Image (tube, rainbow, N blue to C red; front, side, top):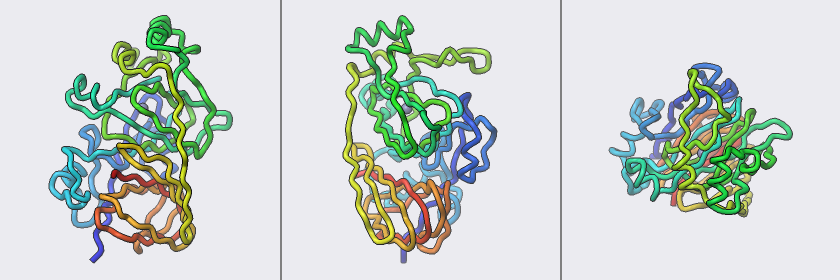
Length: 311
Ligand code: ZN
């Protein structure tokens, strides 16, 4: 008998910079300031529940604790990944994340945060902030303390379909109008360096200047990745990244396509189109997990998927 697909109910986060474009994914969002959809998450700040099947209503964290066989008997005290779709109507604060070592020492044993972005949508001539222009740590400190933001941040053009890996220590920010799918370590630790002096409920949001300066890597080094494209019958797959925390692939399916789930488990988000997986209907906005030992999944339809797994 084939193993069950674990469909998850998304969790929405309202934010000062959020918008209403998550509706485009078929989601029933709480307001027109909905910044994030946590599609696959077992994090304590947003622990998805299972939709349907034998585990209906269970939290993903519970499933991880009590049915580790679904996750290929992975070790670890928590489900390691978090998949979000982000809709930034306004610019996000300029931020940086710690690595595992810094986070476990300074953030109550939290994981650090390595994350990556697949750009779902953005305006023409849009920009994104990745990295900084300071030559060394001292200059990072000077530029931040003296609010030399224009000089400090490294702004580059961004287009629909672009992909970015954001290592801990890398300054980054999305600008208004950008939608993306984020695959990240299951961590919620963000250090805000600069928030454009905006107010939230009449007050500026807390900044984390010291911790930011602690963790920012200087000088910034651009990382380059080779995207591997492979072709199967009625599908193409692009491996966007393979790093110690996750691998991420994008699939384009047109027709009937067989894709092997040969990893401990595989996260899948449908980012466009619709169809079926092993005769179960799926559509844009669905997030699910194929458990360990699932084997060949047969897709049928016209759709695009982002998948992730760990080694
Ligand atoms: Zn981030």
